[in-house]
View 1 (tube, rainbow, N blue to C red):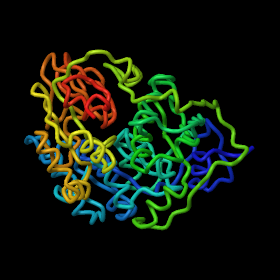
View 2: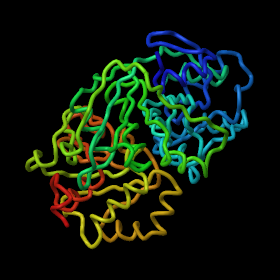
View 3: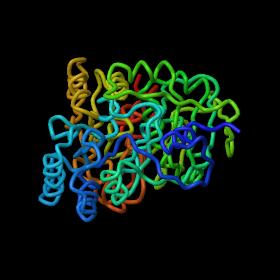
Length: 420
């Protein structure tokens, strides 16, 4: 019996001919990631191990992105811990403010996440890199510490669910809508500790930005990882930026899947996830009249160039509704610069949006857009749990950048066609 992508990557990194779901293995890792929230704990545990040096200074990435630029003394102390550790260990890929970005937008851009690799990060949305054909998954800070010391981690081989998307994309539909639609069908635990393998005509026609957005939210279905087999889109993206050699991995023709789901593009319109779970999805035509106080466009899910271009297309020549605050957060410094060069920032400012430096900020209720009691936000972020963006009695709705931009203009959750 053949193997799925996840199984083949794990087998290769464990020096085994094959692995099967449920098997416990130790496997080499290609990259270990931490941020300003999780890395300080991992650094403390690393020191408790009594190891003087990390296993490979070129295989660790430290990105202060959650509360940076630092919002208070505590976040400044957190950032200082990883800054000093990076200097002490001579970490090659430490990204300081001014050079950093939101970690899951930054690492693919920097060529640090590559096909066929195992990437672990002390952040649940590490699964983003599955868009590049990597097995990427979130771990706890103690596992991060062990991996920094040893260059390996333990894994329970996950079963794989296959999701086939047939047909073509409807207008204004992106990878964000495909994953929201999927989660709406199977629930937030529908892929619990599974690998989600995405394939089909619609996936093949997605841009890399859309694929990254889609795999980013595999964790919102409870998955261990989400993976798209590398194709010309993938290889064109990574070939010019890869920081190390890589070898793509593909599923065997006789790979065994726990279950196969098939979806049709004609059924998928832009999606909106209602509070307080990403599974509470409705098509935009079913939303009804819902007024909003704030719109956030950005995050590791939708802060890339494709997202900003869509936003600019909807906002050009218009004004944000008088009752709405629109916050736009480019995912990295390079994305910010490119948006500036393309004139997108001027469009956003003319529309009376605020444009932030790259930061996770409001996504996790950190800073740069916290909600007060009773306020309602529409966001291109990935989670809408109770209190996720501020007060426990606030509400967060999730959508793609097109719906977010249109809604910022109308003052209520709206389809893009309403402002064009």
